[in-house]
Image (cartoon, rainbow, N blue to C red; front, top):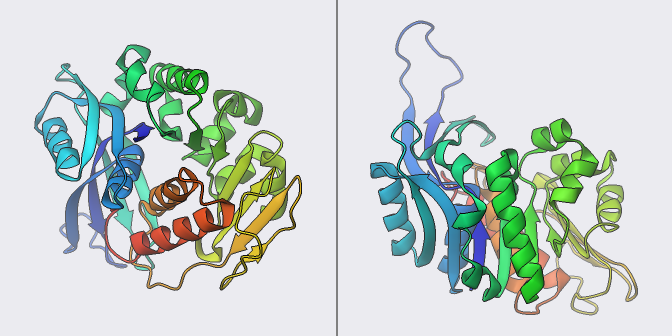
Length: 311
C-alpha cells in the first residue's frame, strides 16, 4: 500500500469574472469538492490501480464524515481521526480561480492542525510500500510531530519516503535549515520551483535540484508550464531514454532527466502538484526509474490541470 499523511479538506472553488460589482452581487460560479493535498494524492494513486491509504484528521461533523465516505468510494483506506471539538471542524479552502487557470487559496486548516503522533498507526506505516508526506502538515507543531513519527517508523521499517514541501512561504518563515531538518530521512523530495528556491536560496532549476541532491537521494522538481527536472545520485532511469522533451543524463553518481510540459489546455492548476507526485511515486515505487517516473508525473499533472478541481 502507498500511504500518505497530511491534510484533508473541503474545497470551495470561486470562478471570478475579471470585473466585479463592488458592495453588491457579482454573478460567478462556486463549486464544492473534496480536497487536501494528501487526500488528492491518495485518490490519484487509488484511481490508477494501486492500494492507497490516507492518515489525517477531520472534524466529527457532516463534512468530515462525507470526506471519509468519499475516500472509501474512491478506493482509499482512510485512517482518519475525527476531532470532536465543535469549534474546530473539518478543514476548508477557498480557491479563487483566474481566467488563465492560476489560483489563489485561502486556507482554514482547522482539524488538520490537531493531527498528533498518537494518530499515526504504526503497523500501517511499517507495512507500507511507500510513505508520502504533504508538507502542509509541517505548518503546526502537533501535525509536524505526527509526520516526524511517521517518517521515523518508515525509516525503521525500510519504507521509502517522499515529501512535497507544499508551501514556499512557510519555508521562508521557518528558515531553510530548519525545514531541511524536518524533511530529514526522505528518499525523494518533490518541490515546485518556488519551494525549491526557498529550500536552497538558488534560482536556476538545475542549481536548485543539484543543491537538493546534497540532502535527498532523488529530486523531482516541478516547473509548471516548463515541465519537470529530476536528479538522482545514482542512475535509476531507463538507459538511453530520450522521449519527446526528455534529456537523459550519463550513467554515474548523478543522473539528470528533464521533460517539457505535456501539451494541454490549462483550466485550473489546483492539485496539479499532487497528481504529479502520485504519478511519480506510482512508477518509482515499482522500480520504473527516474525518467519513467518523471514522465508519468508529468502526464498526470497535465491531466489534472485540464479540468476544474484538484482531482
